[in-house]
Length: 388
Image (spheres, rainbow, N blue to C red):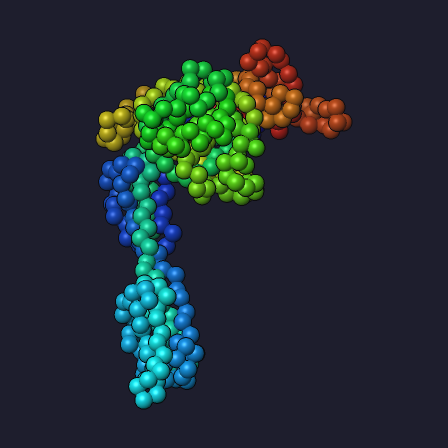
C-alpha cells in the first residue's frame, strides 16, 4: 500500500508516556527507580546562587585598595543584613569616620586588596522540580533529576502559552463547534482545566484567571486577543514562560475553528480526571508542542500501572498503534493546514504516486481526501497534517 510520512499531532487515547524532569543545575535527586510519585511531588531540588553586588569600599572610605581588609567589620562568609555596616575607616582623631553599608542582605563572598572591592551575594533561591505527571520513576539522572513514566492519554496542540500546571479536567461546552464564553465560567471552576470548543477570546481568558482556573484547552484564538493578553507581539521563539496567570492550549489554530471531534470526544471522556498540561511551544528546530497528559487512573498511581499492564496484554491496535503512527496512508485522519480548506478535517482516500501539476504550474505529490461534509478534494501532501 502506498504511504508516506508527514508532520502530525499526537492524539493518543492510551499510551506509555515518559517525562524527563531535570534541574537547571546540579542538585539533589529525592527519588529512586521504582518509586511511585504524584504530579505534585518534588523529585529533585537545588539552590540557585543569588545575584552579587559589588561595593567599591576603598573609594567610599577614601583609602588605598590594599588597606580595605584592615577596616572590614565583616569577613568572607559572614552573613550581613540590608544597610548593615560592613566596613568603617578610623577617620581623623576618631572623627569623620566613613562607613560602608551593605546594599542587600546576603553573605560576604570576596574582599579584594587589589581593586578595593567587596562582593556581597544574595541568598540562594531554592528550586524544586516536581513530578508533573503521576507515575513511576524508571530512571534517575544523577544529580540532575529523573524520568517519570505513566500510562495515559496524550494530546498535543498547535500552540500554547504558559508553563506546566495541574488540575481537574472539566468540559463546559456540549459540542466542539461551541465557543467558550465568559458566562460559562464560575467560581466553582477554581483549580480546574477547562475544555472549550471552537474559540476563546480575551474576555473569557480574563474571566477564567479571575476565577482561579488553571488552564484552558480550546480550538482557536484570534491574534489580536493573544496580543492583548500578553501585552506584546509574540515572536518566533519558545513559549511557555509567559506570566499571564493561566496556561492556554490551542488545538486547531488561529481564528474560530471547531475542535476536532476526536480530540473533543477524548477530552470529554476524561471528565473529572487529573490532567497535566504545558503550553510550551517551539515551531522551529527541535519542535515542541503544547501537551495534555491524563494518567489513566482516578484513584491512584498503582492502578494506573496496573491498567497499563492489562492494556499492554490486551491492547486494541487502533488505540495503541494506529493513533501513534506517523505514516500517511489510506484511512489516515488529517487536518488541512492551507487555504482554501484551512482547518477542515478529513480522511485520506488515495495517495497518488505520480506528481500532479497545480494551478501554480508546480508538480508535486498529492492525495485525495474526503472532508467531513463528504466533499472530495485533491491536495498537495504538504497541505495536511496527521491528527491521530
